[in-house]
Length: 447
Image 1 (cartoon, rainbow, N blue to C red):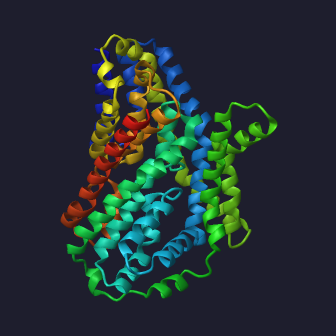
Image 2: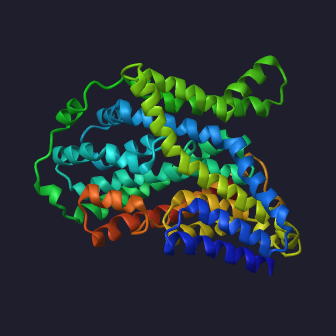
Image 3: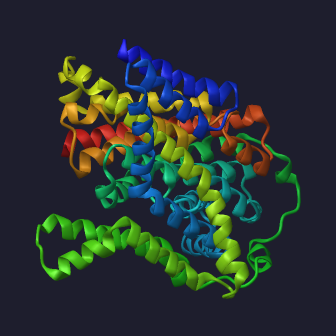
């Protein structure tokens, strides 16, 4: 009966978001109260669990999400994203333009939302397609899939951070970043291959229109920051978190080790990344210090609310007695192999396909599976990182008409909806399947 109540709670989220078009924040809160009350939990305890779950997750990852969003907005507005793209294009040249766009997407979407990244780089995509004499659609799919891979798998993007927080893996964020960067590579490769094989067969109006030359596009953006300054806000937090993780593994309690762990704490590392991003500001004035950061806070607000509501939903489920029920089930087959990873993958894929938001799919799925992990003995840096990867893989599949990113790609590339289904939707399905296969293989080898 308890499992049935939780299932109805999940379906309620899907119904409210996909059919009633209610914001996921309220949908998750309503479902949290429903599961708590329907499971027989005392009414005041339901309220306590909702408040505790919301606040607890904000305690661990709230500042991290805000800092990551600030970095992304500054990279977007300062021209740093363009500078990173220019560096990649300079290294690869014109021989493999689709591969260049895939790699650009892979890098840019680590801190920048995939929707924003695609819009920023849209004119660059068209000019490079003209210069290399390839189809615009193939460049669009290469860029969109490159952006999509790291968006769903690599912190400090909010979705993977929220998933890590829900399953209690915030302390292993360094491992999750490194594993995510590696696991995202096959997903990017699959997207690149699909762009070359399928995208080159799709004709759009932009193929027959004049486009600015690549050099003109770069010049039209104005003065861009140096390569060092452009990459520093991304690289610095990743390096610091990695150093902190290594320092923690040594088990030493020396002053140096504790200092490295302090710098590697996600909150500190991302805040230092924000300060590094300040080097990109064209001017130090109210427009940049208040306006740009204020815009980032507006972008972060709905993510924080969805994440917090997901934490409330997860806490209610965890304290509903589901862990005791799971202990009575024979879950040995799942615990003894990588097959368990299919559970979060399929749940996330179903949620993503039904309601469209990858972030919501990551938040809800991680909340649902969190009580299962201790029961199955899944703990530690690498196992929990792979669980986050499995959830992220499901959150990729699939992007279609109820996903805002689908429409961004469609409108800014000029593809028809039917062509976008063949290109974008199928590409994201292949990316999700590839990612879960790679994740399961890593589990079999190293766990």
